[in-house]
Image (cartoon, rainbow over all chains, first blue to last red; front, side):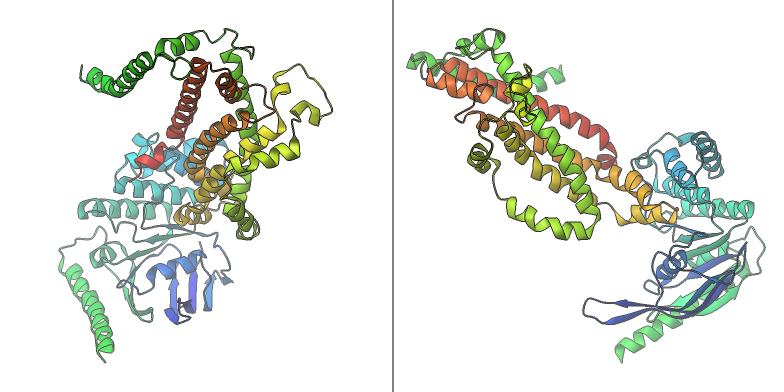
Length: 259
Length: 275
């Protein structure tokens, strides 16, 4: 298991009019092996960019990203990413989607099938292996996407608001699915969300981000026992703490624009 | 019952058309101008009868179809890979696209004089130094193949490029973070994702190829094919053969389109059902 370290990582986008946009500025963070880390922040704070940099889908402009002391350059083979959008390949069946990731790992056809069924079983979807993605609900499609990511068997699982488009009930059910998988597979998980409740329910530690430029403004370790009670006093206190942190940052943004 | 009524509605106008035609033909009473419906029908139901010394209706149809399949296959074999290449490589696109833009406005028919001048009546076996091969290839003129090729070229090429460039970057990124190589991304993501657009290109291309072969066969130097049959029966004022040939062209075009449509729907079902 590997430890992820980000040192003063920055990302500058060049806009249409050659204007430079600081998407991320001097981001320092670590993720211990096996840690469940949630990243929370307002829209435009660069949380998606942060995950994409760690995955190696785009190069960073400054600083360094280290995985077990080794710098991440190009696509990071120890990570995979579950997108917010529904990203299943519609021309493959559910089984085919999971088997795709296994094929990339070089597994034989029979092995792929058995392993894919096993993974679908883990996310509670072995009954629909032959279905096509468009025949499933959004929640089921995200389960398949998670099973597919697990098929890749990464050290670090990056999840970019995977339940952002789902209703509250489905969302909570899938949060438990992810927690179970995390415990069973012992992965490091970096989970981006803008839902405070979701972050507190899942995380070992929460990083709070602010926009303009995107940076980390809070690092909150959680000591609550799992399964967590969303209505317990500690849970609610944390919710208020993070809410205050985020609202302060929103106010400061508003002030800047007024000035 | 409901289905029967709906199906029969599709026949109302065609039948009305035939009735008006027949009334017109009877009133005019000049079969050299407007043939009777039953005269045309008689030609159609006897496709293996020898017609005005040009072979049978079935033979001429087969020759036309064979020419189209020959030229269209060449267009597919060349244009699908080229389109895939242009769609995936910006360099190739930059290199080839100016030529594509330049030639695209040229209707395939515009190439006929050029093809006649350049290829004359050279037949496919002659390209390989064989005078007569005693096969259907003897009736395949190179010039005609060239025209059919131009008919299929742009629909196939442009739709393939469109299909490849339209592949969602989300799918490609997903494949990348799951460890797919470029080759695997091409085979497992780009190709299936572009297939519906490629099929559309094939369908449109085959339709145009079928249209232009008829035009090519009407030209001097042609001695067989359904287009030739039309011109020749016109010269002999055998209007029932002319109209019967036109009906055959329409029917074959319809069958070709429906056939490819059927395949196309099967391979692109995911596209129409995806939300």
